[in-house]
Length: 272
Image (tube, one colour):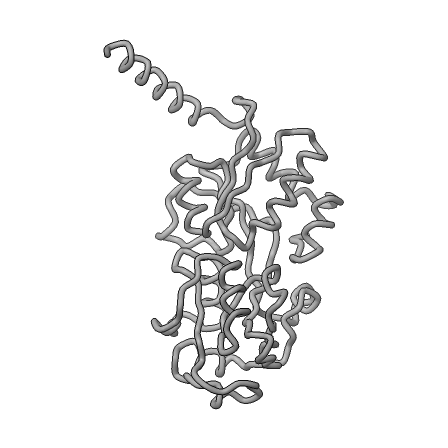
């Protein structure tokens, strides 16, 4: 029994020691998780980084921006993907945010309700629950109760939608169904003709992306600055990036990196 306990203790100490050693020193792949909005982009960047540098392909998971913050702060991952801006007094002390791209957030409806445009006032009335029936919404193709969808509180897309479309004083109606990811939001809206929600650019196919304030929610309009529903994408580290994390982040944000420009420009907004 003593020998077993001692072996377990040694294994535990070894695991703890390994967790404290930078990924490069261990010769292992970087561990990354967080925002579901950034997940498609990060997967492509990870593969391109491996192809370009022959370093181990970073292992990319997903959850929410809140998960990315929590996991990088606790040391469970090397980099957290976060799709909302830093929040002073909320984010743990010592985290470093590095901007890697920008992204658009679209209001989405079911294709059976191809709403062409919403102004800010109507968006606010719908999502705060002041307007509850599609018969009250100009241009709607359906009637009946509005089925409202939002994201969970730890979502960066939720935070971005709140700040861009509602502002500080208004809150989404508590009657809204909360979705865990952009993917489940997309499926919920596609499966419900009376639905309305919001999602990142990369998750709008199959839905109806509604114009906002008369400007279509398209990548082209976001890049030109016409469409205002735009937020930042960040890679977050605990302290200044070091070792393999620093090399990967430097590669991603390096100006004129053709591989990154091609990937980011396909569905997102480059920072350079």
